[in-house]
Image (cartoon, rainbow, N blue to C red):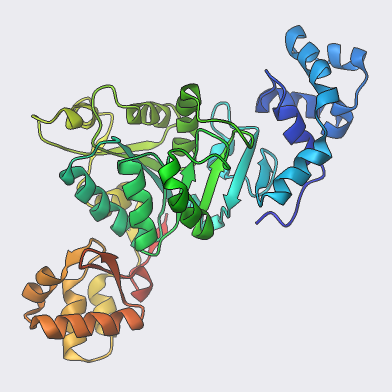
Length: 375
């Protein structure tokens, strides 16, 4: 990732460390001085009359002797972290256009072009079994359809979403409220490592930043800002997940919610979103794919006709879908005995036509011919 490093990246890093200098004011300096290197090295009088608030200009002058732009870059490279300033070509395009985008993203892993097709999944830190299973079911389908799953690495729904996407062979990205070298909660260090290996762990906060409570609401605007939409699964009336939905609404993103029991406190937030018309009720991955204006390129019936003529394979493929199906359900629908279902699923996995998503559940693989494109 980021083999190309713009020459002004060290100065984006340095300026972003100055209190009061966000992306907008850094861009103002870029326009004023032509390059950020010139802005960084400008004379005191030039800085004071550069159009910044007086307090911010004075803070920049105070901070400059303490910050070495090249050393900042070297520290990141030594820790395997990439810096993506707002003007970098690999900076997420949707995020670039939200109000107050991060001046710099610190990234462990890779942000790919395919990650433009992304859905955020958020919810309570204390999910019920229903919420956990709903997350697994929907995220498995999204991941199998090539949708990147974005969340915040928190306990509960966040962790289930990340783990399910990984287990389904999909991509997932975690947005932190700390530096990317300070994983919170600490018990998710291994999960963060797995995410970085096949996706990305990212933050707007500099290395070493602790997970202060005030960092998390701003973090949530990044989660929603990177995505087509936000899915909420179990959230109480005061859940922090609802902050993400508010950012989503302000950013013009779609919001989806899984309904829950009227008797469960953990469902009051999600049910309220649906009741107020602020979120679309969804129960499957396909509900979200349809709401995202994604059209099925090849009907499943056409896919199955193109499959080899083995009767057992056709029967099992006919029982699979983009939503996870338990092997018992596949057996009932196909009419095949359990041993035949198991051996046929193993063969279809080898052929890349089916995928296990854990718990004896399987999905039809998108690459088998069921592909979605954004119109």
